[in-house]
Length: 143
Image (tube, rainbow, N blue to C red):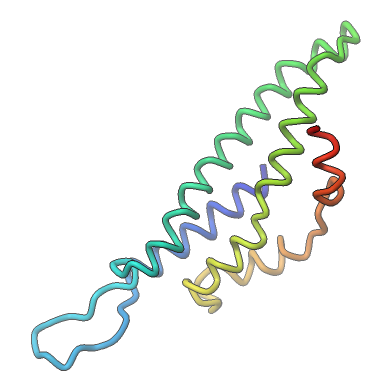
C-alpha cells in the first residue's frame, strides 16, 4: 500500500508543478506564457502516470480486501485455496508497479527542490530495497 501512496504523492506534486509553472516569458506584451501542462510533451509523460497511479492505488486496495476476507479462513479452517490467488495478485502488482522508475520520470517534470516534497520521497522511499525478489522469480510465481 505504501508504494501506491508514494506514487500518489509524487504524481500530485508533478501535476501541481506543471499546472503552475510557465515555460518562458513571451516578448508579446499582455500575453502570458503557457503552463507546462498545456504542452503535448508534458501530457504524454504525465497523463499515463496519472492513470497508472489510479490503477495501482485501487488494485492495492482490492488486494487488501481479498487478504482481509481470506485471512479468517486460513486461520480458523486451515483453508489455503485463496492463498494462491493472493500470491498471484501480489506478484503481478510487484512486477507491474515499478514505481521507482515512475518517480524518476516525475522528478524530471517537477524539479527536486525542497519545497516540492520530492526530497522526502527520495530519502524515505527510494532507499528501501525491493521486497519479494526479482521479476524472474515473480513471473515463476504467476506462471
